Image (cartoon, one colour):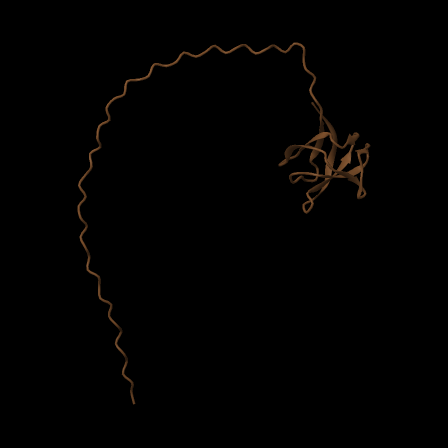
Length: 139
């Protein structure tokens, strides 16, 4: 299950860091999902800073910087990933019936491929290169 907790306001390619504006609280170790037009990945928070100071958690309204494994874009949405509750009505999967083994097919003798006799190629005579005639000097 996912809950929207903010959006990306900036991205720094050098350190691969994103700046997020939060609308919900967030803490280190939580799993986030970043989604945008060309962005879609899930990542566990390993680093978080506010004004260049490391923090363990952030509250709504904070602008935080986090390290990300891939490029993000301004306007990408950030979701908090939470474990989905197990439904008691989930049915166990039915066991698959064993498949019958197919009988091996009798091998047919392979016919030999007919090869055509190759005709020797006619050799062409190499043309002699002629040197251009030297011009006579006039006096």
